[in-house]
Amino acid sequence: MPATLNPYLSFKDNARDAMTFYQSVLGGELSISTFDDLHAATDPSEGPLVMHSQLTTPSGFTLMASDTPSRMEYHPGNNFSVSLSGGPETEDELRGYWDRLTEGATVAMPLEKAVWGDTFGMLTDRFGIAWLVNIAGQAGQGEGS
Image 1 (cartoon, one colour):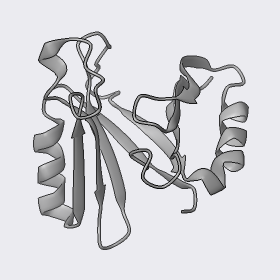
Image 2 (cartoon, one colour; image 1 turned 135 degrees about the vertical axis):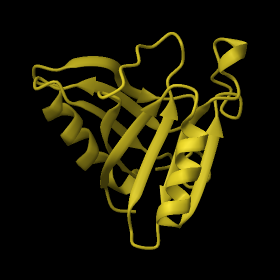
Image 3 (cartoon, helix red, strand yellow; image 1 turned 180 degrees about the vertical axis):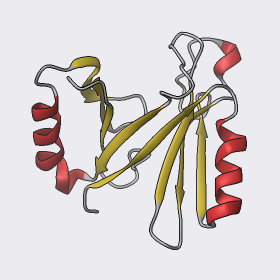
Image 4 (cartoon, one colour; image 1 turned 90 degrees about the vertical axis):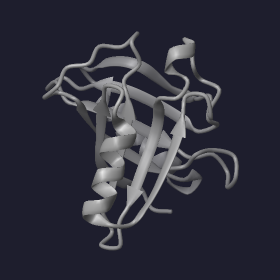
């Protein structure tokens, strides 16, 4: 799978509704994983919330989204990121982007193995733009993006 760039939206407890709506507008396949599905809930109330969702449309659009857990800040209007993702064959390319983006950035989560099996990192670049980098594990190991 080649590396891709797409928007990643953050919601407060309504990501499932939003993504289902976007699917009704754009068509396509929607996958949704909750914090419970990925064994990542740190508070029982966040278990049913969306940890990751992805809509892939017939036109080739990709839209990703998640709910923001209560331990993280949520600011409507600033609730999006740019996502760079790909498979193992693009690992060097994606790590290169990560390394260059970290210059002057604030790293919220280092690029390392995540609970869902992929390599994942989050940062805000020196211009204030939030970036997510996800390198999918071998086929069948991770969520993949």
